[in-house]
Image (cartoon, rainbow, N blue to C red; front, side, top):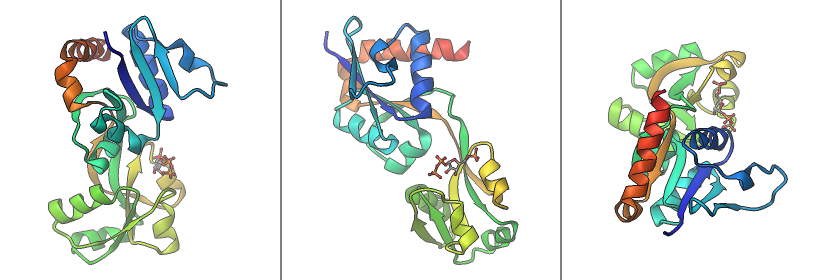
Length: 213
Ligand code: PRP
């Protein structure tokens, strides 16, 4: 039996992913050691390997087959647009992709004005404004702290993830429109899905069962 390799997005999602995997008997003791500098972790018994990667790199590893399976946010899947299968909504990490800004900016969205949109997700923003709203906008790519953009006058609105909404509230901003709901998803390499169909299908089935509990 060959190893099945998992690429997990670093951070909050990885923790919840491992907790969910534990429920179906997939454990990786090695990974729990906080001081380890190792990059790849092995469960010899189940013939599984795990590694942590930056979220946006997970779909890349999966597309090229360096990982058979990945767990990553829907935001990253949409933004990276890789050739991979999205097979399961894991339910956790749920939040929303939204157009946000000061209340005054709402009018600019209704009147299809040429506005600036700052975002870490240019593909998602472009798709929303161009294909869904048919509004021509200028997209400005940022790498973090997106809420700063309308506050300092870089853009009129932002497209960003809203979880609790507290970052927006504390900065005098709000949700103006919802783009789409988000959560953690399991993705699979297209060839692995064929070659390891039995193992992967069982994994999906087992996960579905614990997720519905
Ligand atoms: C995300 C997102 C918002 C915030 C939303 O940022 O970009 O800024 O969380 O969460 P809230 O609605 O619960 O306040 P993250 O902390 O990932 O960092 P970033 O700003 O560097 O992207």
